[in-house]
Length: 213
Image (cartoon, rainbow, N blue to C red; front, side, top):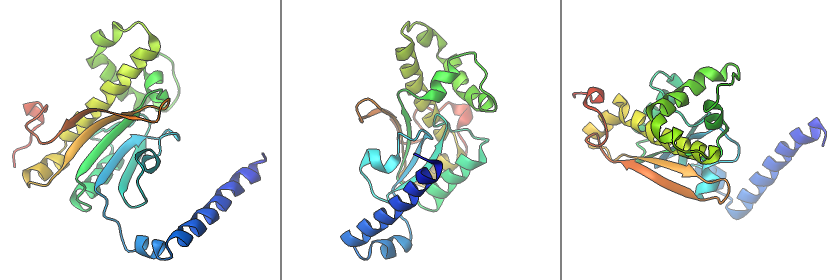
């Protein structure tokens, strides 16, 4: 397929999408344009095989989405913090989901000593997760299983990072209903595995990370 044909595929797909939506509901786009009120913030991997709406069976407007390589939550990343602030304080989401996936290229790259370029600085955060759990991970001889376990541990640590933010803790302080969830998606079966959830700032947060309000 030529490059221009690859590009045109997207335009044609959009026309088909819009036509089908209007056929099913003539008011669909008018309703959608009036605003969004999602109950969920999805922090997922940039991997093209894990689209939030598709794997959860939800529609446009139901999930607010942020994606980056290996679904990392870093307190100095203004991008993810801005998304988090808007989702929690403006949209008032009730659930924040960090969703990784088995077979994640970022996690696998972080397990090596190879240099990949600019992304190495980003992968360093996953290496830090490995460092925290190296005894457990080094005991896993199978490379695929070790990568799967690091994927799980990475998601759990990113949920902890969320819980340590002032944005999330302030929401809990103000009695805002907000739950944090750690998920992993299976590319080989299409199923989500729930690993962990945090309901408030009394759970699983070291005292040094707790703010006084």
